[in-house]
Amino acid sequence: MFPPVATPNSMQPPINPSKLSPEQKDELIVQLFAQIAKLTKEISELKSQLSKNSRNSSKPPSSDGYDKPKPKSRRGKSSKRSGGQKGHKGSTLRQIEHPEHIVYHDITRCDGCGFDLSAQSAEDIERRQVFDIPPIKVQVCEHRAEIKTCPCCSLRNKAVFPALVTQPVQYGVELQAVDTYLSQYQMVPFKRLQELFNDLYQIPLSQGTLDSILDRGYAQLDSFEHQAR
Image 1: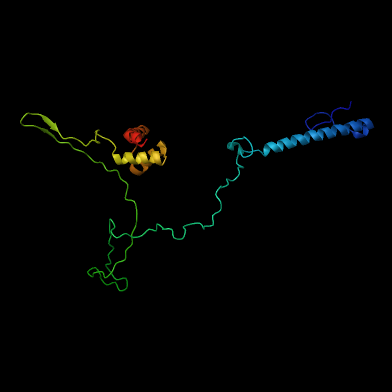
Image 2: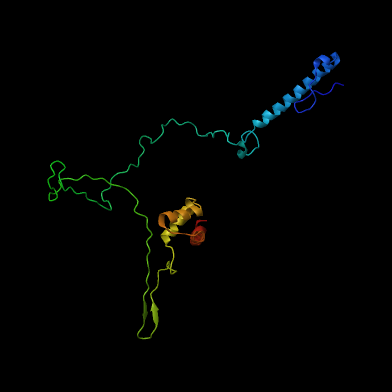
């Protein structure tokens, strides 16, 4: 038998065709064709594996790597142009009739000749309005309950605090409502909620406090949940 055809991984020396007999050359040709067929099959299988992704096989999307196909929208192409449509009521910022604050800018001297205008009344004004959020600052409301001793029976009486004021120091309902809204509707995680309250209000809320606020909100909505069901 003729020795197997040397492959790139084998350590056999290359074959010298001039030293082969006609029968050995024929056998060599047969082995070469068999080797070519085997390599062709392996290359085809490798190409098939490389072409598989999450869309044409059971592979997960994470296996697609950085060469992921661009997502295709299922929506059909609209005949409308982009942006606001004709007849659509816009929300352009407009001046209001009664602003909360008015700042007057006086003219005291003529820009041309320098004449003193401080005593002269204005014949007209030009209005410009700035819509902005007021400075965010926490307001602390202190509740004080009077304590009086009855001169008749010596009973010590104390005024009643509002029902929601139960602790010497606590957070108000408005702050608790904002926390619940951001957490449950806007889906803001606890860590980012802590950063938000600290950055905007300088309030160092702990995760335990945030959790307690949500627990109280859940308990207060219990009766409404049963009615809704």
